[in-house]
Amino acid sequence: MHDDSAEKSFFRRLISDRRIGAMLGLGFSSGLPYLLVYSTQAAWLSEAKVPIETIGLMSELTMAYKFKFLWAPFLDQYDAPIFGKLLGRRRGWIVVAQIGVMAALAGIAFGDPAHWLWWTIGFSLALGFAGATQDVVIDGWRITVAPAEQQAMMSAYAQTGYRIAILCAGAGALYLSDRIGWRGAYLFMAALMAPGVVAAFMAPEPDSDKVAAVRKERPDFATAVVAPIKEMLMRLGPPTIPILVMIAVFRMPDYISGAMAMPLYKSLHYTNTDIATVTKLFGFWVALAGIFVGGYVTPRLGMMPSLMLGTVAASSSHLCFAYLAAHGGDFATFAVAVSIENFAAAFASTVLIAYMSSLTSASLAASQYALLTSLYALPGSLIAGLSGFMVKAMGFERFFMAAAAIGIPVAALCLYVWRLHAKAERSALKTQSAAPSTPAS
Image (cartoon, rainbow, N blue to C red):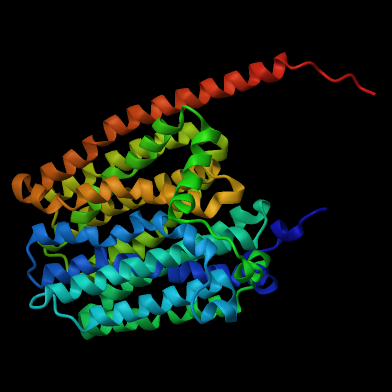
């Protein structure tokens, strides 16, 4: 049967398919919390004269995004309180998580990091947990509401909504902070979660969610968490470990560098408006270009060559920040350095997402994808917590040069995994050629 959805325009799909409009809104609500507990909040902390070592340590407040695989299987098995009966299992959890995000943003808004830093830390931890939970259930909804052949389309709309949210949480929050203060900016961000809540209520309910509440047997903790890992290890075989290690370190330079990007901008005395214009408003379009180029290049160049290109480009782009630290101050240098880094990071992320998606099993896609996204974020985030101490010891210029140098062993590991994949493909071809052919009837 021919699927004519691929022939429809962006707006026709948006109007004709409830899933598309919902995916756009849910992608938006998924993208809103992260910067508000990470990069954007670092600008507030810098203005509040919080020591740079502490700012680096506070990058660990996003830790929930790295450990979300621990509770992801239970969100697949248990219904949300109150909203589970009203909306179904996944949509119910989405709304509960969104309410948590809004409450945490309001809590941060009424804090004062200059005097009550622990208040900010507590609500930021809550924001990270609610945002990570929201990501898990939105991914689960996306995977279960559409068949495999439509997942690329659903992901594209999700990424579009996500990038619009990044623009709002980045540029929007920074612009607002210059005009109405940080409290008003964070309260406004809490109100911006409303479209995502509406999208959750309007989204169609996956068939699997309609019967989830009557399940009698549910796995214990060990079974729920270990089963997706065990299945992946058995399916991928011996190459699994180097593949997982490569995923774990692939974005490490970006995480380490990203924790100190905002303090670098503030140390060069750029205003919040300048930072928002370059990194978020202009950077939004640069990042979209990186996403589209990644999506175009990968099927033509191949997955592993694209991964290699992505890690080399993303790692070396941090040399632009080293140059900015040494020669920065003018607006043009700032814009060029940030644009190169944004494009390279978006390209690398797009390729990595495609690669991780190819590794998941259809029956365990949500749990395994949560595991892989946690894996690629965890090591870099742990080291990013020490980034403030590193800058204090070596200065911004050498720090960003060191972050770029981390990409050398990462590229070597990527090359090794590339060879493993090539060997596996050659072995599969030999097996197929050795198999006896079936005579035509």
